[in-house]
Amino acid sequence: MKKHLAIVLAQPRGFCAGVKRAIEAVEQAVKKYGTPIYVLHEIVHNRYVVDKLKNIGVRFVDTLQEVPRGSVVIFSAHGVATSVELEAQMLDLKVIDATCPLVKKVHHEVQRYEADGSKVILIGHSEHPEIKGTMGRLQSTPLIIETVEDIEKMELSNHIGKISYATQTTLSVDQTRGIVDALQQKFQDIQGQDVKDICYATQNRQDAVKLLAGQVDVLLVIGSHNSSNSNTLKELGKTMKVSSYLIDGAADLQQNWFDNTTRVGITAGASAPEVLVSEVVSMLSNWFEITVQEMEGIEETVRFHLPQELRS
Image 1 (spheres, rainbow, N blue to C red):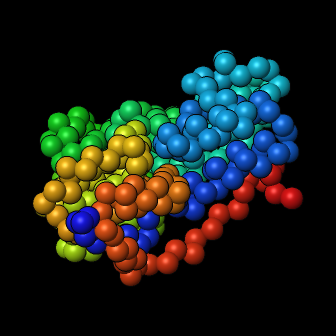
Image 2: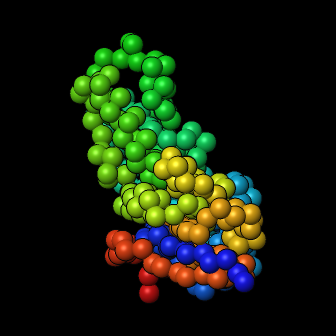
C-alpha cells in the first residue's frame, strides 16, 4: 500500500505579469517577424521556458555583437543599460523591449534621484542582470549593497548631500526591510521606495510561502537555480524551519525527501510555468497516494500590455 501524502499548493505561485508579458512578446515576435528572433540573455530565468523558445527558432545571445545587422532583438524582462540601447541603434537592430514595467519603474526612480543630485545606493546582487541594467541607467556609479554588513563598509564619509536607494525587484522582502532600516538609521534623510512596493509578485509569493510553511514539513520550490526570486522562496522556507528544495522540475525529485513527512507544500518562482507544477504532482502520485489542496490566497489581476511593436 502506498503511503499517503497531502500536497498543499501555494497561492499565488508561478508566472507574474512581467514574465507573462516577456514570454508572450517573444512568441508574438516569432509570429510577426519569423525566425530567427534574437534575445539578449535569457528572456526569464527558467530553463524550461528558454528551451521551449529555442525549439521554435529563438536564439539567445550574450552580446549584441552576435546578432546580425538589421535583425530583430528582444531585451529580456530584467532590463538593460542605456549603452546597450545605443549599441543596438548603431548595429541597426530592430529592438523589442520586454523589460518588466516594474523594473522600468526602478530605472525611472534612480534616474530621478540622480537628476535631483542624490548619490544612489542599489540594494541587490551585483552580478544579477537587473542590477547591471539599473546601474547602466545612471551616469554616476551607484553603490551596491547586498547585506546589512555592507552598509558598515560603505565609503561615503566624504559625501555631503542627498542619498537615495532603490532595490532589485526579486529580493527577500524581509531581508530588504532590514537593510533599508539600517540605511535609514545611518542616513536619516535617505529617500527611497517603501519595501512593500518592491514588486507585488515578489511580496505575494513570499507571503504565500510564509502561510504554507506552517502547514507542511517539506517545501518544493519549482524554479531554475539562476532565478533570484526562486532561490529567495527556498531560503524563506528554510528560515521557517521547513526542509526546502529548489527543483527545475519533476526529474529533480528524490523519493527519500518525503520519508518523514505526510504533508508537502509546492510553490513556483515567478518565471516557472504551471505545467512544471502539474508534472511534479504527477510524479509524486506515482510514489504516493496523494490528495491535493489549493491554499487560499491572493488572486492576482495585474496585466501588462505587450510592447508597442507587437500590439495588433
